[in-house]
Image 1 (cartoon, rainbow, N blue to C red):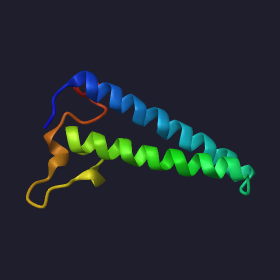
Image 2: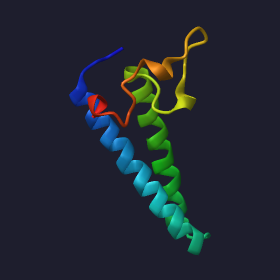
Image 3: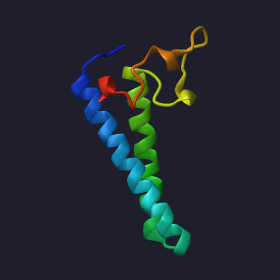
Length: 88
């Protein structure tokens, strides 16, 4: 498991930014559900968020409890957890 905390922090910040952008565009789409530009933006950034999460989990372990990738151990407890200071 990669332990470069600068990379971990940078990647986590990118994930947080993409997550925020998706949440905001989802709110916009609630009001304008047929806006093609917003739908394209949502699709592009959803794919980017999935790639970033996969990269984080491949390098640093599960980002959420749903990211466990092992059939033989529960990696979620291997910490630090994403919200702990050591992970940021």
